[in-house]
Image (cartoon, rainbow, N blue to C red; front, side, top):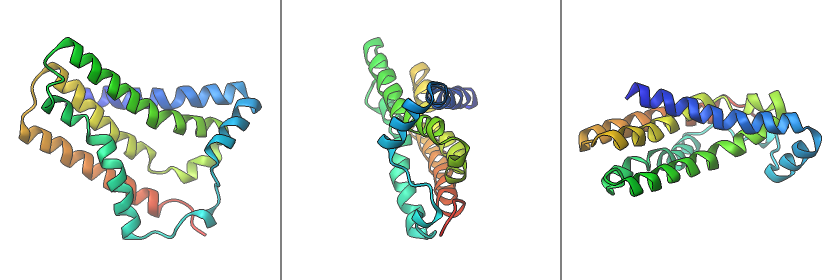
Length: 172
């Protein structure tokens, strides 16, 4: 379990830092286009005050994004090479959809963005658990109790990440 998580965690950071480096290296033209596309307003006054409902809302949004790979084994995607490749493609596509915008933002906004993403290491840890679960399921069947344990870990990490995202960012 730990090896699968660590592999997925490293891949997520690689997928995040590659576009960050690309945007930063290309410079102003790509940075300006990325800023225009993302439209982030990095000001404390734009952040809502921390509240339990905000934390729960963030977690409710992120948990399905991280946990859905647990269902790939239930759907039988681990049984045949073709369906394993489909599962791999789905996991990669979801990973890219989550990491590329963050990496682009890091490259475009630089260190100013760091104050607004204190949750990212923990959030990526939760996402890596979901993606890592697929790596485990590709190699061996996973029982219901094991899936529930993975889901509990994903949920716990993403609740912590949502708390950080709500409480630890600058507020006006």
